[in-house]
Length: 97
Image (cartoon, rainbow, N blue to C red; front, side):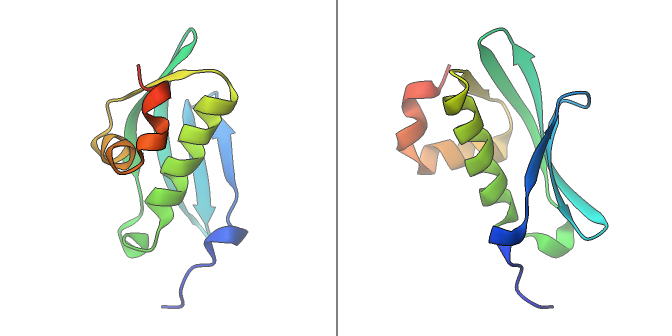
């Protein structure tokens, strides 16, 4: 399988379904969330198995954390993947709820 060109993949916010979506062909990686006033709770991350280990989850995690920062939201990372990402990226400690 060819290496993914992560820079060419766009992440969209789907507020109706309360998730961020990254489409890869006919597959989709997601981060689900619950909005909570000026906070956001990230509850679940899912990457199709064939794309695991290729940076898709990291791209999503970076995006959702930057989304929170840009929108003045505090983050509660209930999702184990997002929580692990935050532990590896202390630059987000100031927006953890």
